[in-house]
Image (cartoon, rainbow, N blue to C red):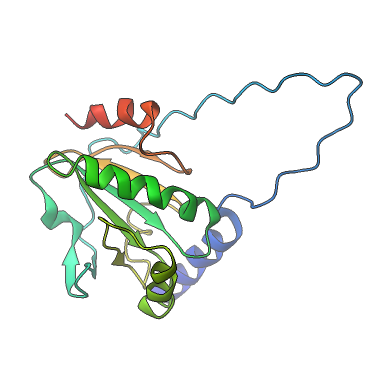
Amino acid sequence: MRRLALASLTLLAALGGCHKQAAPAPQAQEAPTPAAAPAPAAPDMSLKGKPIPEAEIKNDQGATAKLSDLKGKPLLVNLWATWCVPCIKELPTLDALAARDAAKLQVIVVNEDLEGPRVVTPFLQKRPLKTLKPWMDTGNALMIPLKTASLPTTILYDANGREVWRVSRDMDWTSKEAAALLAQAG
């Protein structure tokens, strides 16, 4: 049953998870109109207060660990994959955030590639992160209890390990929008 659930979740992530890579062709118009920037989507707060899952994954040292052991200061958890273009786009901003706010915020990136280090290590050698060290979730142990099937997904937990909000899209984590969201960590 667990294998069926895992296979279903993996299929859902592959089909509907990552944002599409190409924009649709523009429609013909009589006179071009300036495009207004879309308003950023509000974070999802429907699971506010839910504790960090007790799932075991591999930490940045390759040892079995739980994110729930990282209580004590706010924790930003980003789920990503090497095949997800929006995930790749936001990694440098997460790295910059981790370096800038290390004293007050833990930033953990959890890779969801099923092949783990075999694909992640060479990928990151081409795009080195200065501060972040990726954790690995090759069995999607987090995606199921987190009830998410899309990447990237970023979740903010307070210092007690309770969910504050989640964002299921890519974002510039060094922007004013991100700063306003991160201020909610308390």
